[in-house]
Every structure is written in structure tokens, then in C-alpha cells.
Image (tube, rainbow, N blue to C red; front, side):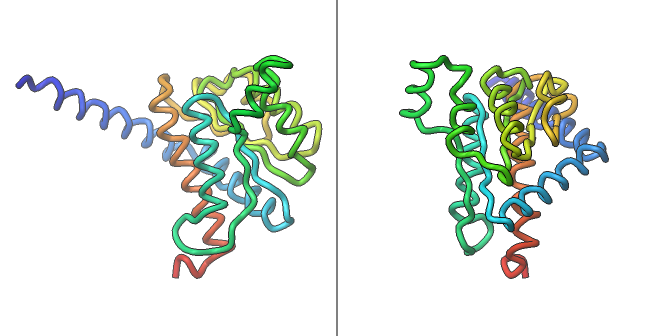
Length: 199
């Protein structure tokens, strides 16, 4: 058997490690993640809801973000209010009637209120329907966090807290860091709100 599969495996891991190292070395990025956690905690403490959206793999990450709050993360604790915009019936209804660019903005109109937080995920920072959701969220007084890549795109300049994965140019490497940010944020919030799970 050729050595190529092993070489490619090692190369993929080294590439992922370089992206992680670049993220860890960026103090501004680490500060943005801390602010994300602080805003998420503040949202929950004031009775707000954590909302999330994205397309494709980013929708999967949005769903992952929501289920960790409504289910459990490290240990048992009360369910926390979180909604991912991923209902196929609602999305297809809006796309059919109003166009795909409106699918997430319409959900913000339905569920978002002042004091909530929207996690908007886009590996390009250019997804039209996610951009529309961000604009609608800001009109309604939500805090908007952008999990982004490829320089952040247009979203980096319009969200309240941009978190742009450095160095990576492909969606797989960017999404690997996005899920790490999601997990780190949840852990940071849990350590403040449910310290008994970390005793």
C-alpha cells in the first residue's frame, strides 16, 4: 500500500494545527471569544434567547450550538433557551414565498427580541441570507456575533463581535475552528453559571 494516505493524514493534521496555533496567538481573537461568552451569559441571565443560523455545514454548527444549551454539555443543569434556524418547513416556506435570501431574517422577525443574541455563521462572511439576518437582528436590538472565515467578508464590518478564523482558506479548516469556539464559549458560560459541573 502506498504511503500517500498516511502522508495526507499527517498533512491534514499539521494544517489544522497551524490554524489552531494562529488562532491561539491572536490576542484580539481570544478577547473576542471571551466577549462572546460574556454576552451569551448576560443574555441567558436576563432571560433572553440564544439564536443561531448558517448554511450547510454552518447550519449544522448552528444546530450544535443550540442543542448544547437545551440539552447538556459537561454535566446536568437546567435547559437554557436556544433556537437554531433549521426547521425545514419554515425555511422552505419562506424560500418559496419570499426567496432564499429572506429565510433567516424572517426567523429573526418571528423569534428575535431586544436582549437576545444571534450567532451568525458564515465561512465566507458573504452569505446573503446570513447578512440579511444580521441586519434584521441589529434593527431589533439583538447582539450579533459572527463566526467567520476568509477575512470575514462583509459580515465582519456589521456584526457586534466578529470572530474571524485566521490563515485558513477552506471551509473545512474554518469550520473546525468554529466548533472549537462554540465549545469554548459554552464551557466559559457554564463555568460561571453552573460551577458545580466543574468542581
